[in-house]
Image 1 (spheres, one colour):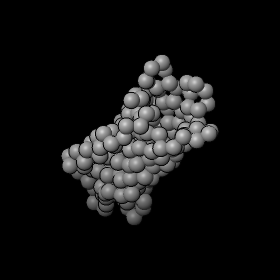
Image 2 (tube, rainbow, N blue to C red):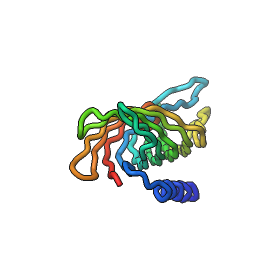
Image 3 (cartoon, one colour):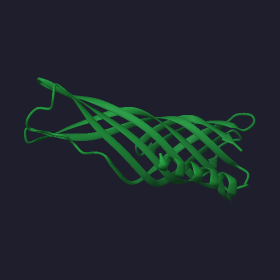
Image 4 (cartoon, rainbow, N blue to C red):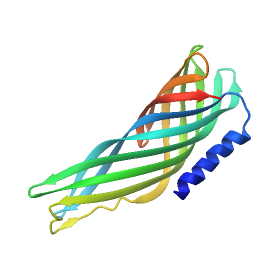
Length: 189
């Protein structure tokens, strides 16, 4: 809860301190994927899973260029995913929860009056929580994986946004990170 409150205060601080035009807040639904391994009978067994998340952003123009603009901002995301792992006589279920807090910078190219294309980088923290459940109880020789941790998080993204009349825009973004596809909306302030 303290991390959520800290990010909210930083987010509001960005909003209060910056009176530049061309600021936006956005939100969207994201897809998430996980890759993990378990050890059983002296073998490493690998699986992957998919899930969903939600992401919020704040961005503002840092510098206008002759061919576009540079922006900077912040991102906060939440996500969950789970997967079943089946073996003869027993199965387990894996649950992941993710919290992402990062800064982001991008280059925005105005393709037309209503369509902008962009790409950029982000860097921050990734807090991952992991747990397992078993049916029936865990067999002898099974070693549960430990995936709960906080680490440095970074990635790249590309996307496009279509600006409607007024202050609203819809966007689609692909990223090389935990949230690999996001679809959402932005409000320009």
